[in-house]
Length: 231
Image (cartoon, rainbow, N blue to C red):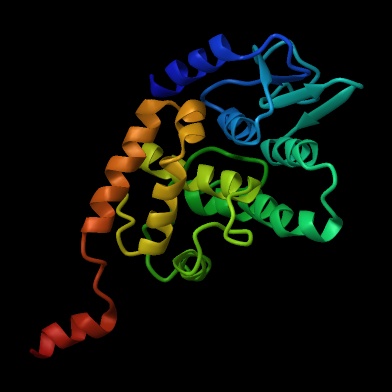
């Protein structure tokens, strides 16, 4: 499938000299880590999912020199962000850390219906009306290009990855009512490193879907529906 082909290309292209090793699979959240590493210019050596030292035998699992061991995709992203900019102050780190944590704790459930301790895909809320957090996210994304100081960062990798899984897992979902989110999803998917990490097939699905949603009129709200009813 599109995930496997993308991951095979990553494995063939990775550097054996890299100090950072990533145990992962294309079906997991490993491509999030690959995406940020590519954006930050951090080479990764890809390893099979097992054996690894992950305490719960899951992926992704990241290792670095000096005995560094990191599990959970968000933690892997934040470790690489620290590695990319070791001089970042606590205040600077706070700007992106909050978004990475929010993606793992809140956006996951909104995108896939996951609950704590059970990450099975149940359904998405992204195409449902009157979801306050998504309406607010849409407003935020209508007012900026990227989440932190209008510059691409690890925050966008975390949030953009989750959002851009939705059209792949839920092909019938219609996100046209939230143009701000859709435009943001497209900006993320247009990046070269996104295509490298997730594969051209995944990237193509996002670009096709977002183009259609942006061309589609937004869902009619209560006021416009009432106006049509009374003529």
